[in-house]
Length: 448
Image (cartoon, rainbow, N blue to C red; front, side, top):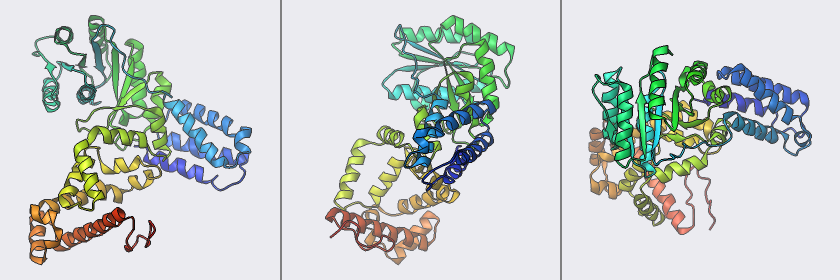
């Protein structure tokens, strides 16, 4: 989502790079570019104005003008101010006072509210809690079926009733069931509307008074831009909200809502969601998102996702086989599956410092997330177990069979096998403390 904004900010900073001293004119020119980048990203104009004024004031301070690397100091200031704009601190869910956390999910239709309810439940489940989902959206029978399907996929209990019931009864009965069923949390999925209307507010208000939720989370579609900010503000005036969930952050929207919503509404963004795949919500860390926007990566989140997604036993076995240079194509499949659990590979690459621009490239995205990786997997799966463990036995006839079985060409099989052979050479060299003279690797790397 922030690819274009990141590019514009990077271009603005490059104007100051390499200068031993920066003048007020240099800062003003850079700030004009930053302001233009923010407005193009659909950031609220008042938020953009205040942001630029704050950065400019700090950037013209004596500690920046006289510093050894003034351009780096300006980047740090922008990073600090972005973090401040996004909320500074991570805001967790409220802890229940009586042992049961009641979460009311609200928002407009199509914002991803029902899916976010399931993702939130999965996140709590992964934390060791026992959540209960409640289908209180009786306006759309499809919403009940959707939540039932999602609850089955993630193995979480659900309370639902017929459409003859009322949302208030569903919510109250779900809370009663949760209190008597040793649940830690109950997540109530309420009805949305195409646009804000009085009936919706009256219904949500009644449910709120009836169940007294610890959290009222508004699910905002980040792709609606500034309209999302306006809707949240209107909603908050009539029903006290405690936090926000931003969805569809992996879309092609400009990202202005994500940058403006905290400043305009005063409400903390607690979680973000990417894609329709049922994965746990991602806790919103303002400092980490600021680093991503500025191309500094997000190694902490990457490590956390790896720890959550990867099977420790499988990872240790793969590491051992790599170290002993016994890594084969069966292990390669296992490794692909482990990494895939972390999400799209281009997204993982983008969390590495300095790799944001490369990860945003359409060619790289296609290579990592598109048909290329699927072809590679198809080729390996078309091999017999013995061929995967001993690629050297694959001769011409076997290559033709593998290509036919995977829907590829023999040259594709040859390319994969050659690349794997080079990787095996590297592993053997690493295990012996030397780097082989592989074309493109620059010869000896690790010494003699």
